[in-house]
Length: 325
Ligand code: ACO
Image (cartoon, rainbow, N blue to C red):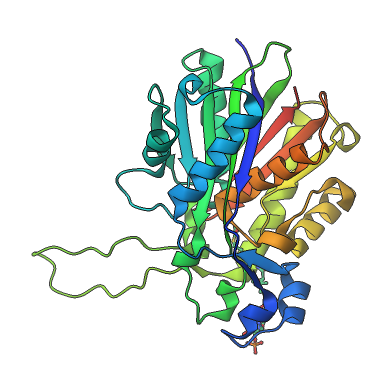
């Protein structure tokens, strides 16, 4: 059985920046409030590109980084809660645009944990030998899912895509531990309704609006606990200590969440990579964008161990331990 390694990373965000000052022209808020409560300074907001456009661009860049061609890809998984359409999937749209005609393709819904869930699927396919090269993309245009009059949510999110290509490792390095968890009893913490129930047998109109709603403080507590518990589980199961870990890359939701998690897991903050000041919360895309930035800036060398931790609506959470090949 061969482990899966990360063979390449890629990311893409829309060019258009919206600063906290820009947000204060839309809702009653301020740079001071947003930055001090969340760490976010600006986010990228689409001026026309949809999720498949961002996913495609991130996929192209991941392919370039891996040295593979589109025809080498066996499977494309796109994690998203903001697809262009329920059908066709974003993954199928990307497959067509890349010309990855050999690849199977499907979307996966696990909210902000989506890239971790996608990597877990891909890693399992590779370990069984069913597939060799798998493109996993986390891509979102959350801007189309926001209530732009609700200051408690619209300031938090942004658009973007991050991608990884997983391939079999010849060195024994790669993904050595995965943990996925879900808790449907907390499903009301974060919601984004789909199409309302509507057919000739249903009399009353369902007027639920299709925007993100959130119980901020509950999400905050869930997130801190999830990060801390996942890190402890990875370290305990793999008989490692935090000094063995080069970086921890968590879902980028809020600076204070990561700060609290660092404190409760007694790990220095400088091990936690953060870029949410520039992109806000791009849901399934955050971890892939962060990984790609780190790879491009030569922050990760062969043999470095990284813990990736996602948490999000559902509620879902998950962690991956990866040794850079
Ligand atoms: N600007 C100015 N004031 C605001 C804003 C804003 N953008 N948003 C809320 N407020 C106000 C509220 O109206 C409230 O005012 P009031 O006291 O007069 O009623 C006050 O600020 C405090 O509101 P709270 O919601 O209690 O603020 P809190 O301290 O909890 O911070 C926050 C809100 C930042 C969202 C916090 O709860 C949080 O970080 N939660 C985690 C949620 C998160 O990060 N979600 C991201 C998506 S989830 C995910 O990725 C898994």
